[in-house]
Length: 420
Ligand SMILES: Nc1ncnc2c1ncn2[C@@H]1O[C@H](COP(=O)(O)OP(=O)(O)O)[C@@H](O)[C@H]1O
Ligand SMILES: [Mg+2]
Image 1 (tube, rainbow, N blue to C red):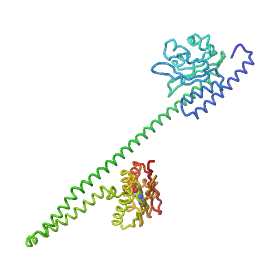
Image 2 (cartoon, protein in one colour; image 1 turned 90 degrees about the horizontal axis):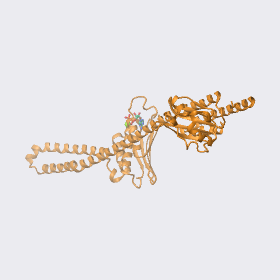
Image 3 (cartoon, protein in one colour; image 1 turned 135 degrees about the horizontal axis):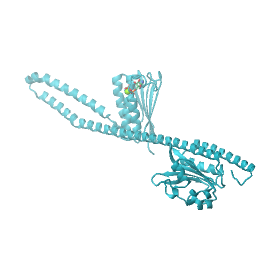
């Protein structure tokens, strides 16, 4: 209490001070919920202490472990530049022996109810006089239990800090400490999320590279097989026919069947080779484009499976980049595999449409459909086909959508947006 005042007036003032401090506490707790960052919270707390609490100035200092200096990180009400002219340390040099240094070292609040009569305030008295501060309170702020900084408030009157005021301001500091732990947890979480996102990005980039390398290798292999082995088999076949034709009748009767058998073997080998080449690299994709390659593939599947397969639409113009074309082709390949394997469909339609800005590719079957949510749970499939389709689409920046329901068939939709 201010001893200069009559007791009734002093009591009235005390009630007003406490009212203001309750308002401060309420505002601080709102700020803790609303403020997105530690810095925002500190600024708000300082402002509220001055505007609602009636203090001359409030600031938050943060301990710099390397320099042992308490660095101002937020303030409000410092109209006379008090903070610019002072240095406060947490160690035991003279500027560490004041209210704040003591509070931080001894991990307790330090109340100075008359700045000009406390020997501890000597180094800062001149600055306090300029600002009109008469009493001060220093309250420790913690992070995960350890002292991290301090909240300082300055009153323009002596003897401001009585037991209740101190208790309320300690509550403010405790609430800030609690909020800091939350920020720290949130920040740790954000960092972990960012790290996971970065790993996912790297993984995606790697899987894209892997797919590209794989497709390049396949293309090279297919070309090599076509250009060397394929040509040689053709030459071999020609040689065999010529030999067959040039044989005198008596020798032909002797080795003819062997030659015929060799010719048949050669034909089988050529067919095998063609099949391997087709698997390695869809025929026509490079030369004729996506639609032609899909038609060719669909025909092959139709011949094998007996389904009615329709390929409709038009070749995207200009053509999509080779990596996108091959990705779309492989996705359709897997979708058709699934349809043949799982759908019990009779009709399958592949549609390619759109040109300039975006291209849409759909594969629709009229089969049994399935519940995409429940697919993984029953353990009957690894779901690798679905995953690979999604990954291939993602790798080339296409969006992948699957629509399926029991009894209602299945549609997969791929959308490619061309860069502007
Ligand atoms: N067109 C489809 N019609 C019906 N069921 C399908 C279709 N496509 C996929 N499925 C279901 O989704 C599952 C997962 O497919 P996928 O990931 O390709 O794995 P897999 O084909 O190896 O089982 C399949 O086992 C099947 O139950
Ligand atoms: Mg599959």
